[in-house]
Length: 199
Ligand SMILES: Nc1nc2c(ncn2[C@@H]2O[C@H](COP(=O)(O)OP(=O)(O)O)[C@@H](O)[C@H]2O)c(=O)[nH]1
Ligand SMILES: [Mg+2]
Image (tube, rainbow, N blue to C red; front, side, top):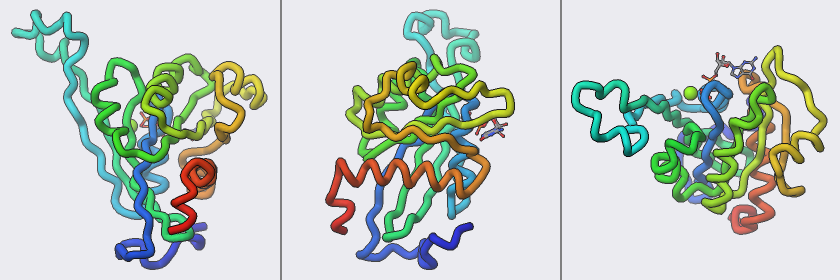
């Protein structure tokens, strides 16, 4: 299944093109799973403590746990054919984490937005943030056993996607399926950033 991946994935060389990609979406949508499936190095998983709404700051004394929340961040690396090395940063897409989200997304070339059709509206925040940041992205619908299936045009319409934005269905636990998501994104990025193709 991994035959398309080059053998020297751990050696940096002049031929390699390094690209930062954000994997994002609501809690529980499969970000950690996707990065674990894809990563050729041991994936890194960190927790960041975030303060919540500023209005709560006055009440911090003695109630710290109530005014903070833990945000999980994932990191992995995947090499695609053509010596394209993708550094994958997984980060939650809720608007209340916007400052952290922007820090992580800075310098990224593109994003994978994972979507769960059982709660499509949870994806609006993250799509807004991505568009504000000017990032190119692909939408990957992660299928769960009780996920309602919608025709692509219904999903596109509901998520208000541009016609050129890739929309794919995936199983984040399956390597081939997860790689297909990256290929959809990279193919899209090549159109927007032809320099990648030249290197
Ligand atoms: N059926 C199914 N379950 C999945 C898939 N991806 C993730 N899960 C499960 O969904 C739960 C949440 O996934 P996780 O990767 O932790 O979500 P995150 O919060 O976005 O990082 C876990 O129990 C996963 O095993 C998938 O493609 N299909
Ligand atoms: Mg996670």
